[in-house]
Image (cartoon, rainbow, N blue to C red; front, side, top):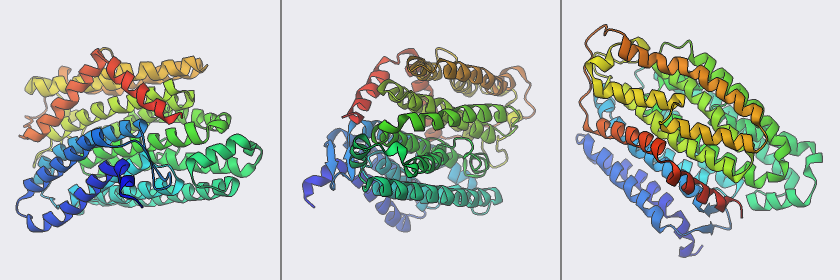
Length: 477
């Protein structure tokens, strides 16, 4: 190995080193909890900034690929990590559950996501996925004195282990068909040989699609999401609802749109079924939820169905639309969870939808922020959520899937009921009790950043769209 090969891995090296440093520092600063969080933030900003100096190209015999496509997803991972750290500071203090390894696990999970986004080999993909998954299993059960948190971790671990087995079986079968683990070599073999007639390739596709569907919480591989989202610590729920989902879509794009491009007629049929089921179950089940975290869990499932439409289009335009949608979804969801955390105090958790009655009257600014996020999740202009859905649906129309876009619009209309129900509670109901907000500058920053970007992307989306299109072109070489 030459030192020049480390250039494409600069952000990953910094973020992995940060995790190790935090693990050591925490042992000496156990009484100075804020310093650990501040160090985690500084290290994350340094890794984020290093993206501008990262050299593009393959490394380690094409096992790792640094390109614009990977950089786009790494931006999502870094912003998600920064905002999750800001959201966690107050929460850990309120719940009296600070342990320094909490931030280490967030960092290592992010490192795994980054490796997944730049994987050029099935082995690298698997290593990144396991680093991310093992870290999030522990994070889900971090409130070890809370039975719901423990239950969430066990359920996530068991179902996650099952999905990993599916992925490994799929990789093994694809290796048996093509004789390679390298994504580019597999793509070349599939282009030169008629592997569609080999039933092993179809089985491998089904197994791998099922494993990735678990990571993005697509139906029928979604059964873990509602219980895990409800039981996990709220900042962890926000982190998990974005990072692993975006990592799953990054892999879907690189593996299916590039490596399995010649097998598109097979995998598009599977993904269409997954997308319709996911939008249907996510939106319908969200209608009957009374717990806001469970509602956002089913909402997250539904949004995975919308984002899948861009993959189904099987075009650079469709993939860039999905990427832009994930970026927008990150700000919408982080903002919604920031409002939930503002209501979380020692005596009040604010996890029931009825708890938001009269919030806009008691706290107008927080109510207005939640209004922005609910409108955006619904897809009401001029919020960013409308822009995200519009371009995803248009990519389906241009690829000949008009009927799928119409179905997606219908399900989006259904979603208005449970999103706007929260708005109705905030603005049209009288408060049942006086709600005090948690005093936290860090939470205020995460809320402000999320609201600002939801409005900015909604009003002036062109620059973000062009950036997504420019980065996705590097996937098609």
